[in-house]
Image (tube, rainbow, N blue to C red):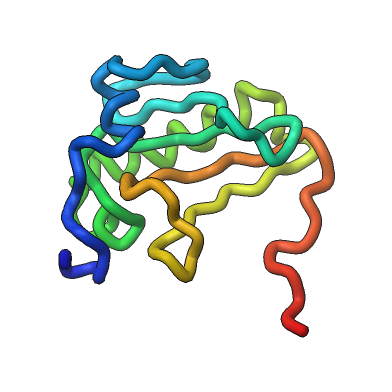
Length: 127
């Protein structure tokens, strides 16, 4: 296990394969630090994934090990994607999942950008 409690980075994960061009994606943005593309199973009218180009398992791994340039470049790419998709006026949500309890499905740090409608509660109320 890594320091973050998650397994080590797996170069066979789907996002690593997308970054290498082995799997196509509907690209929204790409620069030196990030790739953004439409989610194949959208949960909102606009649902884009933004992934760093480095080998980071989670937000904890990314924040602990990425360079300042990678961190800054990544978050600027997230903001640019939201702006370019016209989401600023109505608002949008940026979400990242970490680990099994957080709902992380792909072991490559990524954020979801949701917009195009009112998103609703962040987390459903507990019973």
